[in-house]
Amino acid sequence: MEMQSINIQTTQNVSLRYHLAGLGHRIAATFIDFIILACFGIFFSLLLGFTESYSVTTSVIVGLVIYLYFLLCEIIMNGQTIGKKVMKIKVIKVDSTKPSIGAYVLRWILLPIDYFMMGGVAMIFIILTPKGQRLGDLVANTTVVLDKREENVLQKKKAIIGSVDQDYQPVFPEASRLSMEDISLMRQAVEAFQNRSQRAPMEMLKEKIEAKLNITSGLHPIKFFHTLIKDHTYYSWRDQ
Image 1 (cartoon, rainbow, N blue to C red):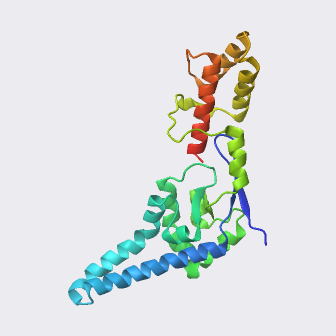
Image 2 (spheres, rainbow, N blue to C red):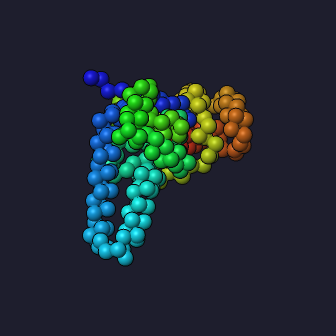
């Protein structure tokens, strides 16, 4: 059976393909998480004892951990719980932006509804929705995918936008707003005019780019284009 996938368009107009986490992956991840929580509860019960003087304290501590576990894990572990980590799945936003704390909170608030009837509500939504979204995902505009994009997609992205050193410091934050057409035009201009004396076409393109980004620069057009391309590449990989 072919695995379902989802194509997500990034802010740099690069299409990334993810495989949706299957129902089995998600159930297994949740099962692992509940095993961890059960072990935690047993451990604290043994640690604090079963005497009446400790029963309230134990109940409060264990209750808080269980209540906040999924929310805190997804916030701290960037869209994963321990179970999701083991199953190599993660939460992402379907609009390509990084999930916010608010998105994680929305997913968490609706967990009781999704887990109603032994998780039956969540399973129905995951099966019936095109992007495999439970109710919490629909409200938060998220879904759960395998934590590994297709290698050819990454290679294609690298071929399109290139790569930069990890310690690269961008010069123009506005470069993130450039389209792939802008990048292509600048590359063509550099290739066509870098060894020629004609500077007018490059100056015209430079003015057009400056106007679009609402910036001004005293850099030579070729240096300006090279810098913008590197900056755009930096932001493209940072926001992946």
